[in-house]
Length: 361
Image (cartoon, rainbow, N blue to C red):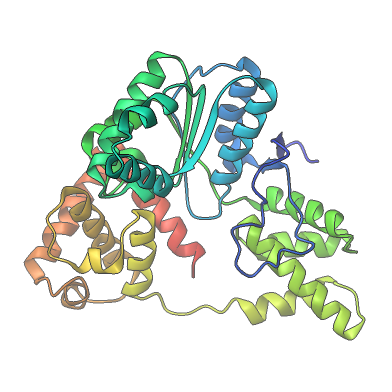
């Protein structure tokens, strides 16, 4: 392994790195019980290694945020598996945001709230994966805020995954945003070139695929994508190689990339899709007349990015976002321009959205 790439060993029950890719069949899909971190994810590596080193929640809640398939779930659930092995007598609970909301609703409907609360308050480690499942569910959010207060008082470790910083997450109450922001928020990024090369090598070795160093480097350099997509590409290349009984070489990879990646003009819809996904909203939300603070912020960022990244006019942008007039669009542009200079969370969100939009091109 190169000096710029770090391997974080995780639990044997960690989520398969390939698990998030719908193109990847379940048979022969390797499970990487580690997180491969290049320089782009060094902060995430330090945060996780700190948990390993101290075996105590030195900073909690630990919020892992980043785009889909970047490895947040793999890290969070792997941490839970490690904790179970290290502290076998302790109570570890792993839930998705949607599961937490459903448990809360069931407890209310069945008048089991006290028993449900008592059970959750005994955990020494709580993992809530994809907090977007709680968006708009005020009762469940209030309950979670109270649970976090009590768990933090007991020095339990809380790990949460989400797509954006808590401060700009749409659909979450200000109280819950504040509580999540009191810990450590660490961005998890799509692997860089060095990490992708290591991932390709690990997948190829796990599958018994013959891949030259030049071919492995070509695949890692050509596809700036998450690990699940790298695995999908490797499997497609394997299938093609078997069909014509020729090796996976750099030329085959070049043709594969040329066939699968075609540049196209960026549209307002492209910008809106990425922005909506980042803030756990829908396109209809961005186009709606809602004046909810988080939704207005997300919509304004989408308008700002559409103006800066596409060749569409103000009237075209306003028409797409619910038929808004020229004055409204200009107001959104000026607001975000000002916030990018004065508000770090907004500046970071815009930077991350630009990267995600470029990656999805």
